[in-house]
Length: 556
Image 1 (cartoon, one colour):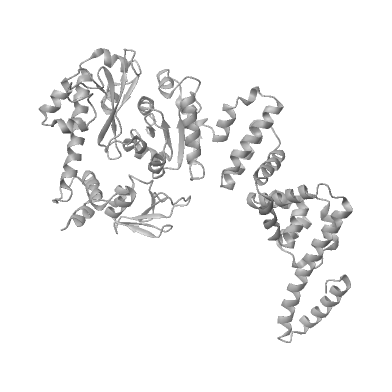
Image 2 (cartoon, helix red, strand yellow; image 1 turned 30 degrees about the vertical axis):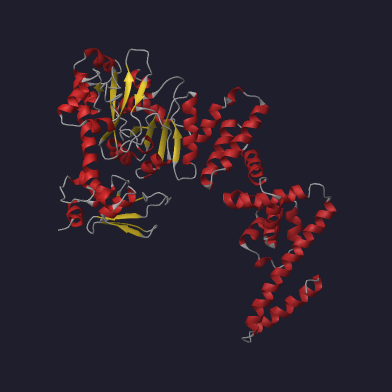
């Protein structure tokens, strides 16, 4: 067999794809929302066939075998996909391509694993360090599961790695030491949190000072192995819980995630002191579309929360913000024995978050008006109409303002951004029926005029028939996208005619009615002429009657 056949026969494609997407059984196959970036969907169209060992997306119209899937999902070349699958299967494949690069990576991963073991063993030797962790309500099992370590010596780690036959060049690449001459561990006297990539390889460290007044945290620098914009702490281990519960909790740093994991919230990860990035969101979207942000309320993380909300806007994420008490983080809450599930259950929407940060309860009328304008501007930036409708109702409820007022002001905010030229072009594209509908929405009094002067009512569109017969019912059942468009044109008409008297308005309405009657007349004539070509006697009678009526009212 060749390399491809060896690996593809050894891999269960369902198990492979489940590392990147939340699969659900569908007959003999499995389905999921497409995990690939750029394909935003709500209804699953991505199918996996265990019997055929392939995956197919009916939206992308693409298929994948195991190797091709890894190449596309990891955005890597064939040789790198083979390397990744080695880690998944443990199969030794005899090949000499890119051997040097592979061996280098393998050695660095091995070095990090040995460093983790050294730190872990050192941690067990110091009761005072273990007490620090015990005081945070963390058990021996948690310490072991999360590979807690301690950097206890300047040079012992270097000596330990040398005893494992790592050369100085490899040790330099690890970025663990201040410099190779002094052989000093840069993380000395710190609690060590090892960081793993999406394949569970150790690639970096975060280190926390315990007693001295130094920088509280030190982190491994960026490297070929470690890009913190593309790594979420504990994601590999949390995958199953995330897909099963269909949401993810994202915290600031490792200790928050460890505390929540130890309390049973196994779908928790951390950004490790980094803002949530597009690469992070790509990783998350493969597993779930529901994201619960759990950051501190200080200025830096308030900025990070707003940035994350913006990145997830219009990207098919459902975003919630876990509202923590001031100056408390998840670790504090778990250690004090509070029920963190309550905070999850009461997580808020982005709109609620913006309202709370404004301290709106302490504001007056003018401040409330200003806040409302800012919130409506935020809602305007969302593309999904259901989401916009939800947020507008939430604004109405939280600010105690009538829904009608909120919707009317929203439409003004939404549509006054158009230039006059854009508005003119839009009006030019309007049909006479649209104009009648928009004038009816503008003022209910116009209904009487239109009902009196419009002929051929049986030939009107369903929308126009309904608004003429049941104006209020029509407005209440109108979908948001249509309502917004109609209200916008109505607003333009209102603004353009605000200095026009009633008699002049009647002239404008009559022009529209005449235009509509002519349009319907032409359609009727065209239809009847076709019927008359087949010597339809009834069509001849209708045509004669129609022409006479048209002459009477001057539209022929």
